[in-house]
Length: 90
Image (cartoon, rainbow, N blue to C red):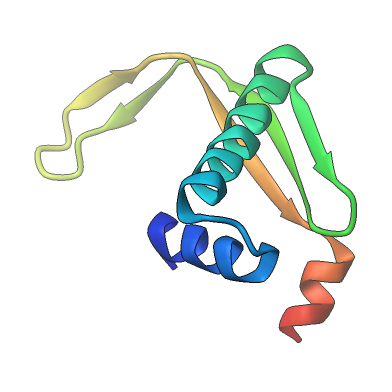
C-alpha cells in the first residue's frame, strides 16, 4: 500500500476529504518521528511499538572487493508488532 492509497482509505473510512486525510496522515507520521526523537519510543497499544536504537560505529566489508569499510554510528528504528495486529494477520 502506498501513502496515497492509505490517504484514500482514511478519507473513505472517516468521511474526510483527501486533503484532510493527507493532513491527518502527515500529522500522525510527524508525531511518531517527534516521539522517537524526544522519548526514544512510541507505543500504539495493540498495534505496534517503534523504538529508536543507537548503533555503534563498526568496521564492515565491501562485499564486492572485500575491502574494510568504516560504518559510522547511527540511530535505527525497531518496529515490533502488537497483539491486535498479529491477530488480524493470522
